[in-house]
Amino acid sequence: MKKILFVALAALGLSACDSEPKFKVEGEISGADGKTLYLEASALEGIVPLDSFKLKGNGTFAFKQTRPVSPEFYRLRVDDKVINFSIDSTETVRLNAPYTDFSTAYTVEGSANSAKIKELTMKQMQLQTNVNALIQSMQAHKMGADVFEDSLATLMKNYKDEVKINYIFAAPNTAAAYFALFQKLNNYLIFDPLNNKDDVKCFAAVATSLNNYYPHADRSKNLYNIVIKGMKNTRAPQQKVVELPTEAVSETGIIDINLRDMKGNMHKLSDLKGKAVILDFTIYQSAVSPTHNYMLRDLYDKYAGQGLEIYQVSLDADEHYWKTTADNLPWVCVRDANGVYSSIAAAYNVQSLPAVFLINKKSELSARGESIKDLDAAVKALL
Image (cartoon, rainbow, N blue to C red; front, side):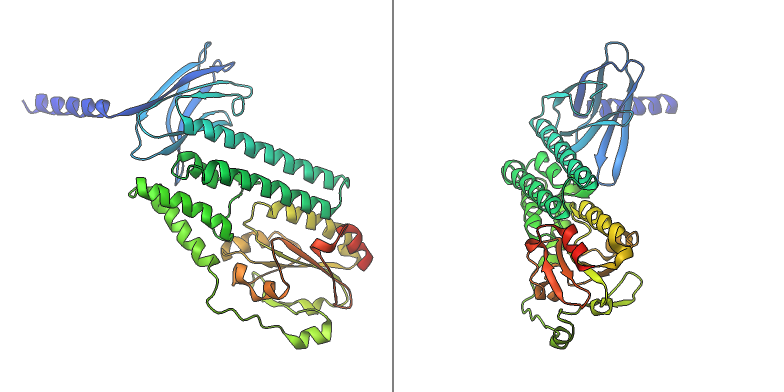
């Protein structure tokens, strides 16, 4: 009798699971006979495998999963090719794609957010292509470092402005807006929630909307915590006093800087007298940081043997991240813990990041980035 009761309860439990509301993902993957298609959740803690299906000649597939309690993100994967999409409730999403161009040539039906996610994905891929083209042009010496920096800044501004207007502020309560916040360039977040005041506003808009609709969702809570940390990092101090070291200015012709590197050693800018110096203010967590540092590395490799040094001041809010990144760089890397409200950056009248200054061998300020027409030629002239 007990055995019969146990079997009955187990069957009841399975029936209850089967009766839970589900969403469905179906479609066709052409040219993928014998390949395995994976359904995965893009969770806060990382990628979580959910199901798999071995594709046959016609490429048809269908997955069913329990609906999420709030909008969530998923992906289809074949080999290393990925399609991202979102699920709000119990919808049926249809995805058709060729295996060869799986991540770009797919079509999506049944989910307006997933269609927006595709648009964002395509725009991000084009941005990456354009940035790579800039790097290649500079590497081939078809453009100067100054043109490279200006072109990169324009690309990033135009991209962020478009995404802010059309995807984030237009509908901050959608999964597409959330997806836009976490897009990456060179594996760095395009929108920086910890160091950029304007970007924090984008995160705050989405966090507020999600909290109104899904206050108990993990993503809502996580986004809220990010915004609080970002607001704290970028909040202007109530009273800001910029202290200019006048003795250093009169003696060396520059406003001296004395900050610690990742090992705790102090480095004074004035100690580099006798060398041509690129003074650089930057944020390593910025999406443009890798390409900016690539430009600096190109100049450093070319002129370090002739007396060039780079003194790079990080304004990153995340100290651990700065240390990890700076450890791979060959020049002087220090950090100002005051971040974007650095009094040193204010003394140099830094208006945007990254910001470059040139200092000659007499330790005199020679030029600032926006006034330099050809950075390579300007550096060479100082040597």
